[in-house]
Image 1 (cartoon, one colour):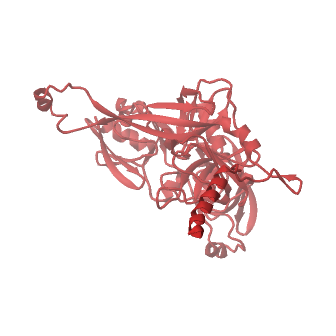
Image 2 (tube, rainbow, N blue to C red):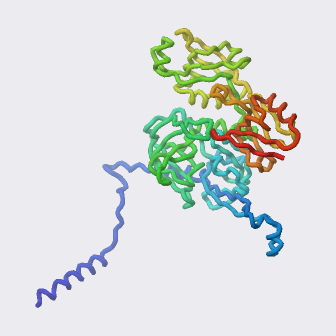
Image 3 (tube, rainbow, N blue to C red):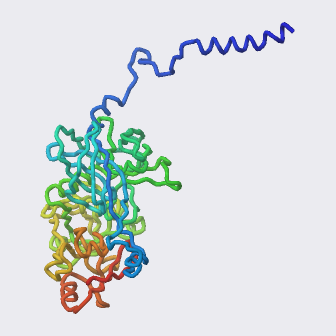
Length: 454
């Protein structure tokens, strides 16, 4: 009996002693073998004030067959006022100019938003003004009227290597500023639909919804990328995130601050990947470079003496490995700059200097009052080589008639009222010949639509 009575007493005593003992949290030692352990905290103390939270609100009109019926509204005494619902979204941004209050973020974070607010790491919140957007690279810049800001220094992302350590800072799921770390998993990733310029940094640092527009930094606390997208089969992070390199972001940022838009030029050539088979056919030992497939008539490239069949090795000292990479570089140099190209022709290396020319453009208001707030451009030569004909909507004011009709920057107008459009001259002639409504035929993401404009 005594033995059976003592067992529970001993057990309770053990629990009492355990609860009474002081709780010591586990943690890493301050030093190992006399050496202090490395920490990201000093770097993040400098970086986090430059990363902000971006909140947007979009008012969407709600349509209903019953509510749109005048008899129904009159019978039930429903006021004739448009019904709206408010859609809210969130993202992140990076302060890139403390004096001007410029914040760089993703275009998809603020696209179509009616109200944009920016919250700083110190808790201050400001309404933001859109400076400009660039859907082709998925970048945008806004301005906030704030003082005592701290801008983040941009590094040269062209010097990144696979295996470099990086840190992602953003606002995932609206939780507030969050930091994750990883490495550069790959460079030069492409293949994303809807983006004209692609040269993504791949990282395994956790990037989740809400991180878009946030900072990807190196261990010196410098901006190497703008977090933009993830690959996920489930909607959550699986260790495959993508960031827009700072080299591309710097050019877009400079263009937006100067012009409110990105003014890209062209060399007037279409290129394709140089495969091993093509390299062998041209007598080249290495398949490094791109093959010139077509040279536009009276273009800068033709004036410089370039020909179809030339192989471009470098552009402005940057090695070129694919057609997409060449396209990315072509879009990062301002109009008027002379680029030095290293070219191989008939197994002989040559140096060719080509001036970046501005794409021919046209204001919609110069053609028809209904097209006010729209700017159109000639299609780049590479699109013509892919069999696409028409004119490109390069800029569109959201409150313009076309903006309210559902058009977007990047849409390609291929026809109007069953008449084909090939270039800007033909666009002007066709539009001015139409009496009555315009039925514009457009191509967006490879799909065709017809939109009526009255």
